[in-house]
Image (cartoon, rainbow, N blue to C red; front, side, top):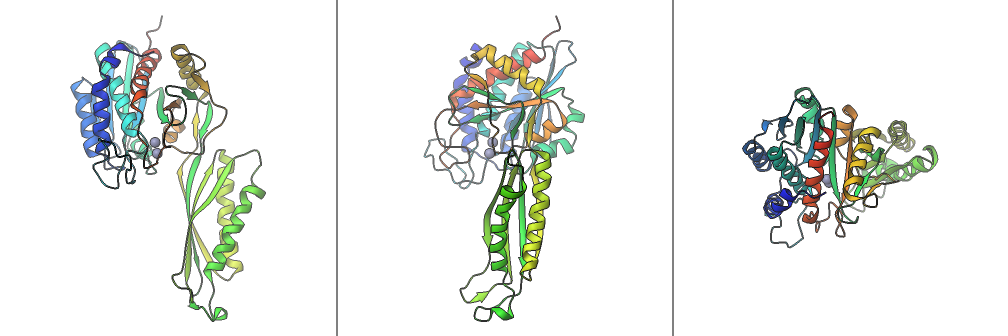
Length: 386
Ligand SMILES: [Zn+2]
Ligand SMILES: [Zn+2]
């Protein structure tokens, strides 16, 4: 499984990963990171394309005469979190942090890129896609809107995420839905402000809002098929400042997750109706700003079976498994999988804080495993026809 040339360079790539970790950049601001990625790919002989999605980078390498084309994606962005790891290479930028391990994803793919450029042990074309803004800003969608697959046609696309609290180096696959769709909803309830002692002269948006929060709880329990997972969380309820003043408006902010497309549509319809009609029943009005952020991530069966079978061959069936359950997280690689066949899988990173935690750090122990797997996957996908 592990490729000896990659293992021999492990220290260099760990140092590079820690360098990226200390210089986190938020979505669409990955200037230093994309400069570095583009420079290294160029040095190693890749044709480098910049500017898709602003800071996106695509490195292309062709070998042999094969016509197949594979796309492998890494994400480069960090999160607006104040790092609390206390590590020597902790973020040098207060309030920004690589808390999702995208520093590790980037370097895993670079380590694979280095090896593939040297070995050229494949027959076809490799497109290495370094995308900006995975964390909620849909950098993948933007690269696609700006022509990603027109400029760099791919027969299949693959991506990985490091996954804490799974054994180090375990590969986890799931054909079909792996991650949920994510929507953000803002409900603005307008009433009429007034004196707290004279509710009869006001229209209270807080009471309407409180009732709306409770009514929203009935959508999953009373409207959605019990066999289908769905989540509605009211994460923010903002209104008012003083005990004796009835405010003029209230705002609710919701995070909504679903897996099946029909459920996705149903949630949007019901949330919109419940918010409007609840507000109306209290004499208020509600406007609903419903934003679909990411679709559900759906792996295609054939490409998932291909990647899984390869992992079984490399690390054994007990370490390359099909997981039974999907996860309520979301991921904008889902957009790429709407257009291209492919597989997104998880790589166990061992015990430690969960993704997006202020004490999270990418586990460097999986760097050479992830990089070696990318090389094997590209070589096998682009194997010369016998
Ligand atoms: Zn994340
Ligand atoms: Zn992530």
